[in-house]
Length: 109
View (cartoon, rainbow, N blue to C red):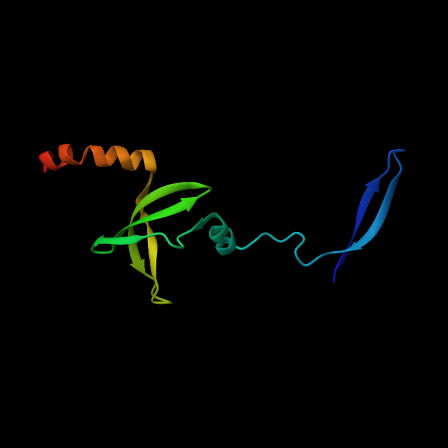
């Protein structure tokens, strides 16, 4: 394992160098996938298809609920369906506001 020197100072302003072994987890950031999994999960949340590669899902992010309306694509390398860039995440308050305006929106169609 690599080692490095770290300087420590006591209350008497003296500086001491100690050689310590680097822990495997020191200095390494979690991968992007690990960070994403920590922040947001869709476990138990519903995903509803609304046609042609578009879906609505409910998720938690940093303790808040969001309603995601998003286009999905098929990853060519894995064949897995993944969320794309095009979409919107609504807070619960925004979702409630949208639901209240549905009849007004319908009358414009």
